[in-house]
Image (cartoon, rainbow, N blue to C red; front, top):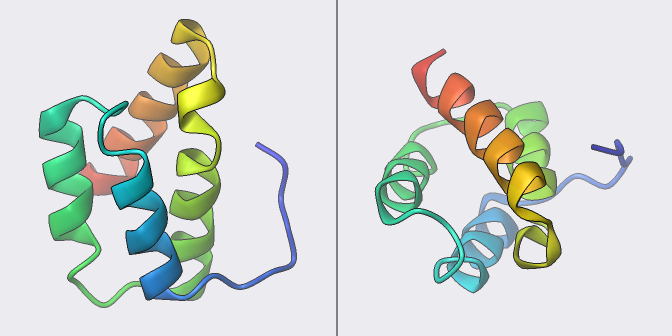
Length: 76
């Protein structure tokens, strides 16, 4: 993942999640959606945004890798 200096709002991250809903495993989508309802630091919001960004264009291996990072964050 490339890092970026733009801070993404919670609304931006939720919007990005919704735009990728059909491409994410449904259980992971639901968990991320619930996680975003909690109070999260800006760095976490940015990281989730970038994991979701262009998720639909990523290859299967890349998607699996991103899924694992998301799962790790949710369990953290």
